[in-house]
Length: 511
Image 1: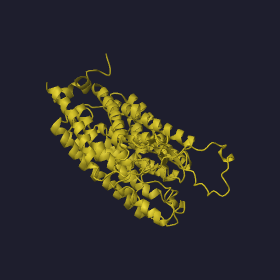
Image 2 (image 1 turned 60 degrees about the horizontal axis):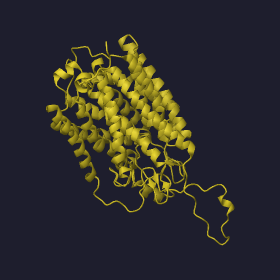
Image 3 (image 1 turned 60 degrees about the vertical axis):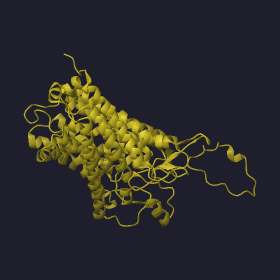
Image 4 (image 1 turned 90 degrees about the vertical axis):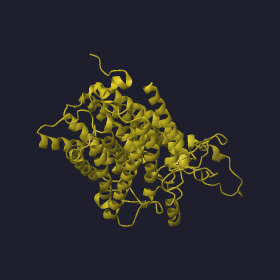
C-alpha cells in the first residue's frame, strides 16, 4: 500500500511541477507575429529552382527583395551528427561511466536513472523547455511561443523555420537546433545523479529532475545563451537594440561556448546540494565502496570523449573554421588533462591508475567546454594541464574539506573543472594569447577595441557566481519539496541490499 501511495505522490509531483511552470512564465500575452528565438529566423520559402532566373520580370518592375537564407545541407548534416554524438555521450557513455563506479548491487539503478532522466527531459524539452530557454521574453526567461514546438512548421505556407548560427546569412533547420539543444538539457540533468548514487529513491530522482530542469536549467540556459542572432545587427543602434533582447549574462558579455556554466557548474551545484541533503551512504568511510568495474568506466569515459566532439564542435552550429578549432581543442585539452592527472596521481600516490586516467579525461573535457571555440590550441593545452591537477585536488583534498559524500565526484570534476574552465576562458580568449577575442557584428570582423583580460575574467566570474547561486537556491527548494512529498532516501535495509533488487527487481549480474 505504501509503495502505491509513493508512486501516486511521485506522479502528482511531476504533474504539479509542470502545472506550476506554465503560469509562472506566462505573465504577458504572446506576440501575434512570428517569434524570434535564440537562433530562429522567420520561416523561409524553399530556394528557387536553378532555372527560375530564365523567366525574366518586366524591365520596369522594382527589384525583388533578397531571398531569405536557406540551410546548407552540409551544415545540417554536421549538426545532426553532432546531436547523435551528444546522445552517445549520455546513453551509453555517461551511464556506463557512472555504472562502473558504483558497487555491483547498484549498477542497474544508475543505468536506469541516467536512461530515464534522458528520456524524461527530452519530452519536457519539446513540450515547454525549448520555448522557455530559447524564445524572446525577458532577460531571465523565454516565453511560450514555441510551446509544443508550435510555429516551426507553417502548414499554410508549407515551410519550416530556420535557426541562425553565429555567421550572418547562415542558418540551420530549427528542428535540428531543437534536437541539439535538447540533448544538452538531458545530459545536464543526468550528470546530477552521480552525486547521490546508491541511496536515492527512483521516484524522487524523477520528481526532482522535473522541478530542477524547469526552474534551474532553463533560466540559466536562457540567461547565458539566448540572443536573436546576428542577421539583424547592421549598425551600432541595431546592435544595442538586439542586445537588449538577449539573456542577462549574454548581455554582459559572458563567454560560454558549449556549457561550462549552463551544463557543468549548474549540474555540479545541484549534485552537491543533493549529496548534502540526502546524507552519506550507509558505511561511508568505514566500508569499501570501490568501483565494481573500471572496465565499464573506461568504456564510458571513451564514449564521453568521442561524443564530446559533437558537444563542443557542434556548438559552433556550422561546419566551419570555429568547429575545427573547437574540435582540436577538445582533442588536445583532454589529452593534456589525462596526462597531468595521471602523473599527478603517480607522484602523490605512488601508482598511476586507470580510474585516474578516465577521470582526468573527463576533467579536461569539462574544462575546455566553455573555451572550446574561443581559445587557441596552446590556450587549450594549458587549460587541460591545469584541469587535470586541479580536479585531482577537487576529488581528494577539497572533498575531504567539504566532508560530503559526493558518490561519483560530480562536484570535484564538473564543478571544479567547470569553474576553472569558465574563468580561464576569459584569459585565453585574448587575441594576444592566440584566442578569438570578441567579434563585432556591426563591422562583421574582430572587434577593434583592445581585449581586456581583467574585465573579461570579471564577467566570467559573474556568470559563474550567478550560476552557483541560482542552481543552489533552486536545488535546495526542489529537494525539500520532493522530500516532503515522496522522501529522498531509500530505507537503510534497501540501501544495504542494493537498489537493483529493491527498486527495480532485477540484477546486473548473475552468478
